[in-house]
Length: 181
Image (cartoon, rainbow, N blue to C red):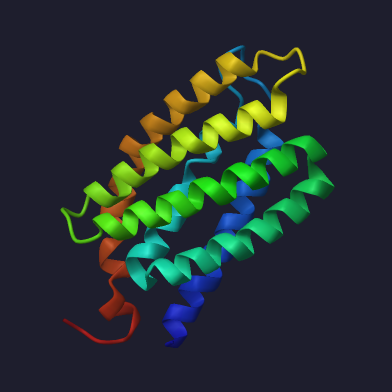
């Protein structure tokens, strides 16, 4: 693994831990009965995973998810409600692994298919697991938060495809390996 690839991998782990921890804190701050602030930050986790997957492959993307999972759950247990931290950890791990699996299967298709289809499916799983585990039985409007959250995740898939496309030239495995095309 080249120095550039190691830096990219470590950057992915750090970005993942920041996004997930921040989202776990922000999900405790409702905007209204349909949204929390966490809905706006969490979709960046899928962008990080997809960029690592595109650049370094599924095994390295899984490594980022596993290390990011441990770091984010640990930090979230210190900074957020324990129920949210644990629900987030379960949802994050399962959804990110689904994202990696689907992205890897679609990686040879048009550049936009893998990130869009994998993120839409993984966002659905993440929303279902997180909101039902974190808020069911609390008396909070978790069902509408889940619908609003999923709607934002779908919108963010459409928005984040733009930076994904722009960053493709920097995540090309040959570029990261120091080899010009």
